Length: 363
Image (cartoon, rainbow, N blue to C red):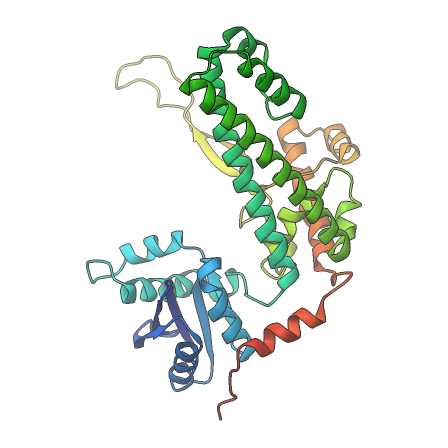
């Protein structure tokens, strides 16, 4: 088997083919990030061997077009997290950093970890739209938080009594923004007052955009995966995150994959601690053995199931052990939901997507 690593950039892509049995370099090429370059990369790859897999650096906005071209041509494509490139590159004998070195690092990271441990790329425009919208809303919320922090600092100087009465999570409400705006208009017209008023206007606009995106996500999810919204504790944003991050569960082919990959946050991290011992001379008793403790991996979103949690506690498990069991139970349940076909797939979008890139069939 040949593993073709791809280092993705905006204008060019560096490809490096590595033999799956020996790890030896089978060839390298650099292609343009356009349809003609994708065709040239396919011709080059098909001359290396029959069995091959493409390992694409997971930069979704830059790698989407080459992923579409390869999948449409019937190639097997997997996604490699960018952080694994640094670990693999440190093991290279050749010093320095270049696009070709990075491409080889991607391929050898796949060989080291195993091809089946990486998520497979596939075409699903509806899931991609949901992910793009939820990511855009998250960016808006982060910008709103930044502007709120700046506004509070201005209010400390302009209206300290009003700022002290504002709850930490209430400054983005319409009523509170109106109250702040009225108070600022009564202050002396200075540069700080002007900046604070402009921040109020900007925060109000961002709040409207975020709310509109959430309503749009609700409509998309109801048409695509309404069973997620029917789950208790799984709202629009949680469902959108699940759909966008798992991409209809092909990135997590088995329910157990939700744990070791950290998506569900249920894989416990072992932390060993040394028990303290009283001061003793060197001939005294040895230190007591370390104790293995576990903590949950703080990742992703987790709804709640009170009945399951109470039952595990009744079995004698501690609170943390019961919570960890609950998260595994929820990971299994969500995996079953995501493994089902979507309620309302959009075949028209997929046909347009598959025919948008004309990839001839090579013989």
